[in-house]
Image 1 (cartoon, helix red, strand yellow):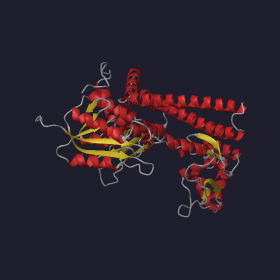
Image 2 (cartoon, rainbow, N blue to C red):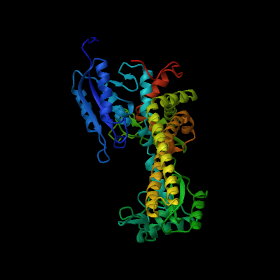
Image 3 (cartoon, rainbow, N blue to C red):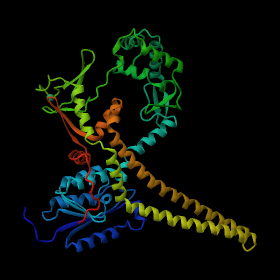
Image 4 (cartoon, rainbow, N blue to C red):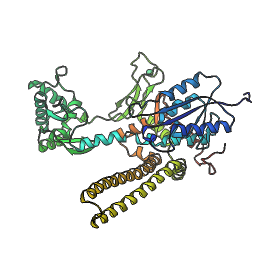
Length: 501
Ligand SMILES: [Zn+2]
């Protein structure tokens, strides 16, 4: 490659969120000034400056996208200057988009340059940082789950109410008994609890007795019946993430009838197949030849085999049957590639702490200055009380001041708590994440089918099967994670996070 002697041409990017706008040191001008100085010092030419101010109303990053477009079209610019990692990326998709451009990025405050020729350990570190970025970790769906759990705790079903219930337009939380379909549910429980009828026969019997499941499905399928008969909702509970909460709705059946029904499921004198085997890889892996989903089936009563469904016409892989265990073995290997040792865990934690030093410093300062304010206010409140006792000020004046300052004191205290919580949160969340990587082997081994599927979907994408071989990609930035760890299970001991420029 020809070495250019002309100065490097760059673009600058600055970003501030509405929350940060009020804080000192986070402003756009402060960021731009830092970047401009850096460019001057390194004899770079600034072609364009991009900035995004996020408000509560507008979360989009118009200028971030403009910048990417600009770089894509520009023949002379392939470098971004930005203050810190978290200014440039807000989440994994951001990281993936920028990474795909194949450009150089200077993280000025972190003294790090990432280029396409970067050492893998630098890229590895970069990936980890994004992975750990506060926003990403906090958005891991935890907030959503929290909301849903709360709803369940309050006794409301999350989402659509079960068959037999309905919701009223003016009350979206409460489930109300549906006059028509509830009769079907009650009768189904009564019949099945007797313990001498299969699900298939139950469906037929209900129909014979004149019960209609749904207009276009008059006879319910076995799985539909099973879902009804195993749902504790009908005796007044709400289930969320395998936990039962007392519901706010009116039950259709008694707990006793429900228990007898569950007992009936366990009776031996009935056909065995009402407990369907779960197919671990259902809908998850595609055929490499035709792009169809591969699907599982049970052979010889217990072994699960997968094959191409041939849904897009005749396919050469349609008649190859791959045992589930063979697929799983390869998946486990893929997951283990991102597992970390205790040593990794400590090392990454340390590196992260360093990279978030600035932020921690800021938090500490804020807590300190708030504490000073708090102390002053307390003294004032004490003093004015003495003034009142001495008769220097009126009762009214005292009451007014006292109320105002007590209010201020409470506000300050809640701000202090918020800052303390935020920094604990970040460290805690980061530690939790690393714990997952550390325990990924056990999480998979001891997980149930759903948990295993979640774990796989969390780490891998584009799963295809060719013959008996599974191909896959790691989701970003697990790719770097996997590569970085794979290459050398031992970490570079003298790897420094603050690379010299
Ligand atoms: Zn196929």
